[in-house]
Image (tube, rainbow, N blue to C red):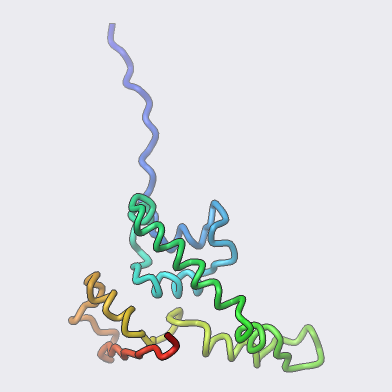
Length: 155
């Protein structure tokens, strides 16, 4: 007697890591929107379109992601951030959009999201080189992509 084939579940879609971070089904990236997700992945030298399972299947990369996530988020708990962004009112009206705080946040705390240029510290630049993430033939419009290397002095 012929048997019916066993039912099978459809394969999991190869969702990009940025989509996983922004959808945040398990709460690990609570509060992350597109700009924080892009900035975080930039700091980790991870292409936002990379399938997320590559990180989850590699214990060393997963541990690096975890360590980098805590380091990335420490900035938002620092006295400097809280003094510069969270407590600088530009009006006595509490319902007025805080232009001063927004300007400081966008200038000092958004790294790459919707920016045409980004500062790259030396270690990160070499990490991008090691991973082969630069394309020397790539241009955006008619402007040639320029990499500016910044050496950290904060230890």
